Image (tube, rainbow over all chains, first blue to last red; front, side):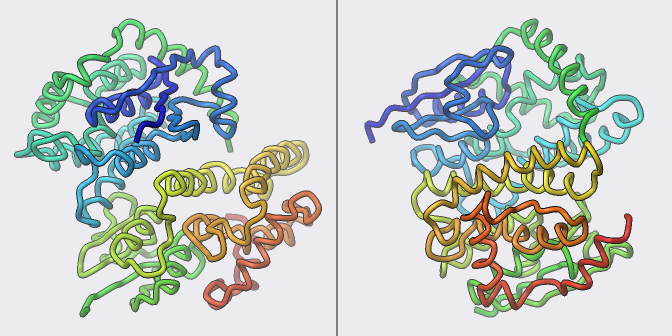
Length: 221
Length: 214
């Protein structure tokens, strides 16, 4: 294919990591361009004028934002090590749960007080589903890592940080033993282990992000 | 093929409408099950325990929920009249714009509709910004999908109907023909396409629905 692949990402963006893992798993060579989301460079505005966020994949000069969209693109472009299953129904399930987990756990992290109580329900529900799904399997993709593993792959390292910053407990090892075991396995795989960011940096970032996000949310309808 | 296809929908759900259009475009026979969301059926709760919403596609007894997930499932299962383009980059961009439609455009247009005074003015500015992106995307094309209706058209299609209803109720122009010539023209072309025209929810019923505070 020979075309240049760049990934504009940030250590602060847990969504960026999904893309790195996917590229590494598929053995795709890429150049990583580091962004600081608190001080965005002109590149972000150029390559993602709509959302002005990371990650953005740039392949042969063509930019692509939105991490789950990028994951599907990567899967369709580099056929080694397929991420999504072949069967349309199973693909649908992987997509459904990836979207759901993204939305619900994030909402729980952002919520406060009474809203938090309400948000915990769906967040725990998504973990319960994942627990059921992972039973008897090493990864969501089976023997090998798949789409849903990458989509929820932020859980092992980041959820713990979000729990601390967001004052909530979600991934209880007693309540979710299989999921907990998956999390331990997931962080060990080489592409993931290679790029785990230091915990203290994440805590500090998410703390300030939370304050900012909550203020934005207060202005929404 | 002896397949059983059911679609759980309501008369007005724009998300369910996407699925109706997709099934009709592909000529797939299906049974429509109309739900009353104030009195959800046991089947709906069984098939979509997570969100308890429509649309739900049930294919040979297996349920799929979330309209974009359903659209992709339909496209992968019934290969005639493809909704998504073949090229991976164009497919990715189609998914991107569909998501943008729901996340940003719909929200900002809704805000123009429900807010008043200064807040409405600000909402209109935000909506205009978002619509500009779509206008740009639409230039030189009849539909977002090119010559024929595709995934993004289905995703954004409700705009072609809902916006004029909102405009009528609040007496404010959201998609100005002069400011958004390509988008405006698309709205007319989309609404006129036979499959689409045959499936809009009744306009007067929609006006009543959106006029009443809820």
